[in-house]
Image (cartoon, rainbow, N blue to C red; front, side):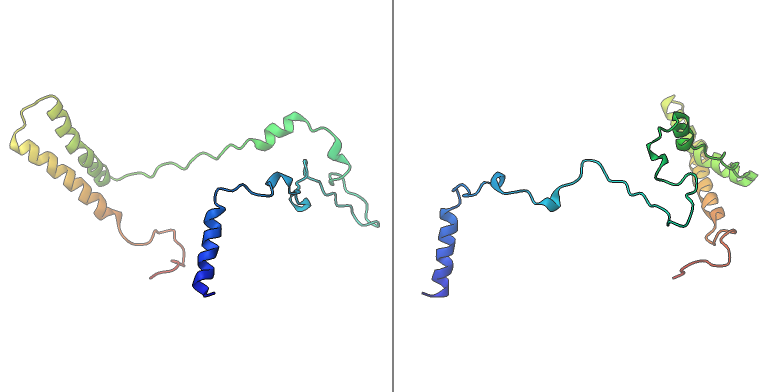
Length: 156
């Protein structure tokens, strides 16, 4: 027989047994003991060496005592510190923010109210938006922050 005919015979056997049921049902196979998980996790108790006295609060003897319910409330409660105050903005930054949002807001209100807009009003609103955006981007800066310390990290 040639290697090709052996391979063809194997394929014929696979195709012929495609719809056959398995001889051994998986329920008949035993469950391996290594897969068994204990129902409750085991607790390890570390005992001090024989010469040392046991300190109060060590795990072991006090584990069976019921805990006070008030302890759980105190342990799980965290109150974050108040946030730091927002930084003070100078007049230029405030005007840039007003121009950035005020120009489009005026155009939106005027369009919804069907106001007749003069050319100079349209130009002023669009120029305010662009000017506010440019002012904020220019003032943003591209240098490292002042509080970055002596090491700027990896600089490529």
